[in-house]
Length: 412
Image 1 (cartoon, rainbow, N blue to C red):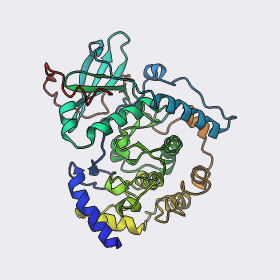
Image 2 (image 1 turned 45 degrees about the vertical axis):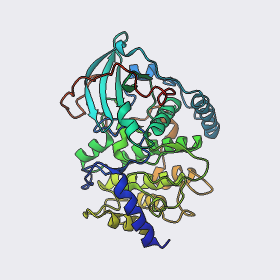
Image 3 (image 1 turned 120 degrees about the vertical axis):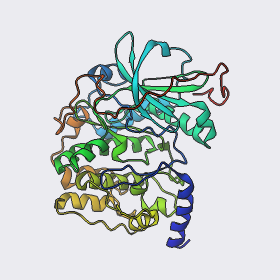
Image 4 (image 1 turned 90 degrees about the horizontal axis):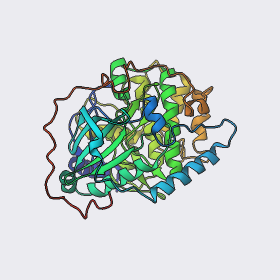
């Protein structure tokens, strides 16, 4: 199919698969997201992650340390074995235990449900509880399988810069995912407030994101939705990637049309099969947006076709505040030619981690949380929600007397 034909085909599919509305304005309004394989509700303003010392100490793997003397590839191999063990033995949601928590306030709302701040009565630990309607999931094609998939991934991953699931529950009408609460807020909100980050701050965040993507890829997972909205800043100033709705295990390539328009790699737009290298394209776009305050292919036009045409051409223009090294790195990540894109070459992630821009980065120190962050969120305590928007509290959840979709949610 000619390039223009591919773009037109993509536009037709896109029209049917976008949820929400609006487009970015510099680092402001959030991008639309294609929802074909979204496996959890898109919840505004909040995505739960680990942050407080108490939450970290109680969470799986919270006390593990990375050794500067060990072979990191061997470390990744061990983490993969742990992941596969958990992934192949998924936990089934408990049908009791919700009374162990106090519900405090709403943190976010979305198409399928809400996220609420809760506190465990016995330990006084804070968690974020994602509450999702069974009925609404069933109404959306493919959402059930992808919700199950996300839950399975959340319970299986274990890495310093990723969220994982603390516990899960279900009742007659809803399913519940509990994750440790982080009080620092979204990177998106911080970027919007600051307009842009300096290179040192972007490097601090970027190094952690690179390590997280490297870990996911080593497990065989493709993430597919890397953007500031899906990254939180924890109480120490470190990043946590959240929202695994588009994440999936792949062997080689996949063809699913999904992602956020401004972060899509050309091969997705052209309706080609694609692999994990699309995440490295998105990583380059993320680095650019952190330092510029807007994405490299941003357009004022509401016509998504103009955006896609710019992405397919892959020409990036840099503002004057970009140094030589970061320009070089981004040009090698936001690279249309897959035979030249960093992360997809013979040296793998070493081309990225050993690039001049990351010179002097203490990778092991970052993994162990030993590097002082350039920005520390101002929070009063583990349950402080001041970094999040205030929502009108929705009506109390109405649980039906009859258990809905017993067969469909038997494995949840």
